[in-house]
Length: 213
Image (cartoon, rainbow, N blue to C red; front, side, top):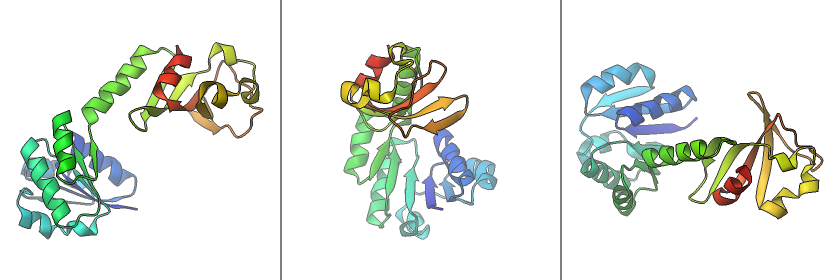
């Protein structure tokens, strides 16, 4: 279980707080908007109202005691100020939400350990999903690599992993296969590819897109 502070109870912040809390984490959700805190207080471990662009209010939260602190504030200037104060107060790991590339750059300059950009990432994931009929799901690892759920390429059906030598030929890794809602790891080079099973593969986006066409 992790101890997590989330600053900002807007659309992204409160959903993140609820998911983290449902996964067994200890979550403190704070915002200056009293109505938002009243609405979501019973869905997290603890909640508090306050203006956290004020350094003293942040300090009172004991930010050093949290494993992770998320800054999910929409206002450009406020998010920069809060991120800067958090690092000054000794917060161990600060993850700040950006709304633009410029915002992302300034957050990193202000000390954010990591910047998340949900709108861009979700847009890219949708673009991948709707560009290729044989890609069913996608998880981004970095700008060039991801984990994909794909249909088994027709040329692979009936052949084994060792026959095709996927890693050497395509420079991707076949992790598992999916049957219905269940996922099964592939631990043997003797695995035979089937038309009715999806594959979970990891590799460079460009290479996976190529085999998924």
